[in-house]
Length: 205
Image (cartoon, rainbow, N blue to C red; front, side, top):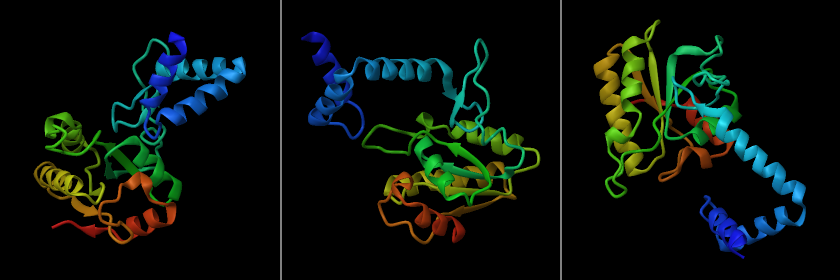
C-alpha cells in the first residue's frame, strides 16, 4: 500500500514524531474519512493563507493576491516599537506571549549560529534586524536577547549585541536572566519561568 507507506514516512519526519507515533496518527485520521478531509483542508489553507511577517519574521496572514501582511503583534499600535525582543523561532514568540507581560515587538532570527550544523550569520535574519535598528522611528531603545542558554545561543547573542552597538548605539542590550537553566530553549519554558526571566533581564556587557 504505497499511499499508506508514503503517509507514514511523511508523518514520521515531523518533529516529535517517530514511526509508532506516525502509525497512531495515521490510523486515527483514516478511521474516519472526515478527519482526513479536515486535516488536508487545514494544511492546504495554511500553505496558501499563511506567510512570514515582512517586519519581524512571525507567522502572518497572506491576503489573496497581496503580499503577506504584518503579523498581529507588529500591526498593534499599542505595542512599544522601541523595544525589540530577539528570539530564535516563532515558537519562542508564542511562549513569550502566553505570559502576557511583554508589550514590545519581536524579531525572529530563524535559528542560531552553529558550526556543527553549518549555520552562519548569513543564514539568519540578522540583516533584517540591522535594517530595523537603522531605520526605526522612534529609535530603538532596548534589544532583549531571548535566546537559548546554549553555547550557540550565547554566540548568536554576542553577534546581535555587536550589531546593536554599531547600528543603534543609544540602545541598551539586555538578556533574560533568572529562571533560564543552562542549555534550555525558550519555547520549552513555562509561563512563570519566562515571566521571571523577562522581568529580571540584565544588561549585556
